[in-house]
Image 1: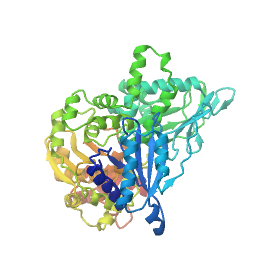
Image 2 (image 1 turned 120 degrees about the vertical axis):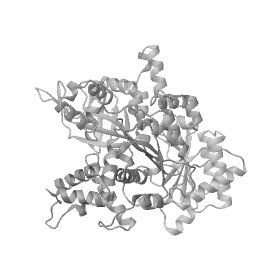
Image 3 (image 1 turned 45 degrees about the vertical axis):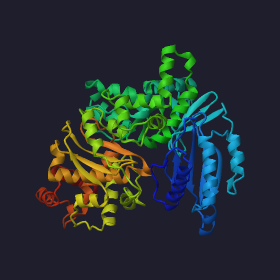
Image 4 (image 1 turned 90 degrees about the horizontal axis):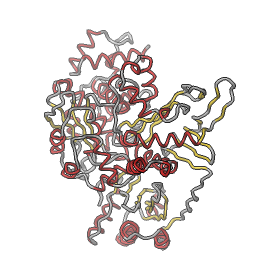
Length: 589
């Protein structure tokens, strides 16, 4: 029933108690996983139900009475609705476990109606009042892609608008006469939703990667494309305009704001600037927001379903759109096979990718199963199913302690990334990790010893694509694994091995926030996950060679001769250290 637990002992105790009680009654419940902010959430059933468990912030006296809260949820139209909630003691007791199990069974397995669930929960001593959800008004609907309202779309009866953290992103002025406003015509929203439906695999599942001409450009797609235009890449490389058409909303309507959506790892980076249209000036500052895929994709699907009038489409197009936007297991299987033409249902089944995994992937755009991350991150490479098989055979089942030391090390460190300067996040985290591990800036780090001490299994494998440095897997059900590609010159030497291991350590520490799954190949020509990659690159070199060691007595960065000596002493490549030193020079200047 339960695949993973959080660090909190109360959640481990409650869920393990429920598991044991369910086992005795031979009940098969959906699995639970971390959902951020200390909340555990069950997988969604075929009928659209799920349950959450959250610790309440209470004084010691109250925690003994109502320290945790259970909530029963329904998703009638892909939008969660709270049906009933009740609180339990912080530590479970036999009577409370039996009562809670009965309510969970009724809701998840016995298919109680919402009214039946409300009546049953009302008899629980810790029942909580639940406000009835407002009826869905056609006058105004809000679609927020993140919990903190970092980006959203507001639809009213005759108009719509774009918003980010209290700012309107659709504020415009007409060229020539200066008239303007903040709202857009609904016809443009309909065109946008049609475009989203056509690009659904790219936007929701990341079935795409940047062309080589813009792969090294900034994280935000709006900035990357602007630089590509200045470098004439849009004229000289046909792949760049094609990529633009899959990520820029102006591909749907030339009068829309210059807004981009790009899937990067398990986040969507939404970016924009004030580039004018043929008739309008948009008055918005250049900026970007990061939204979690698991939050943004269900909201985006709801928007498209609400606005896309399938009856106006041809029968073939209507069927294609309906299949793409579905959130059942069939849609999940189809989506994961977009990553590689070399796999089929049989291959997925042989590696334990189940119908529930497929449904989770279709619904949320991400999956805890390592196959999804590996296939996605290998797009554009020459890896084969045999290479995947080699890696998957190295995985070992996890236990309750597999990630304990990694979680303890990362505890309290903010994993948030500034999309404009993600490398700064890497530098900051590397310094914190060195301090927590007990190293001074002058101390040499044995990265293999550190990784092993943290419970990371380090293996080698021979992969056919020699540009792949290695593989990193940190996902529920398996112990953390780093595999180095013995066929890759950049990772097989001493310095390359050290940097690669430090890079993967960053992923395992900070790219599993909220117990998100992590499984990815590193290096090669397919990588467009700039957000996490730039942070991990900076983390790796700062962990091994702190910037403080590169500053001489005069307060300046040491010369190239001394840099070469430091590279030899610290066993890192001169090339990596030169880039590190250049970043430091830019800071000091």
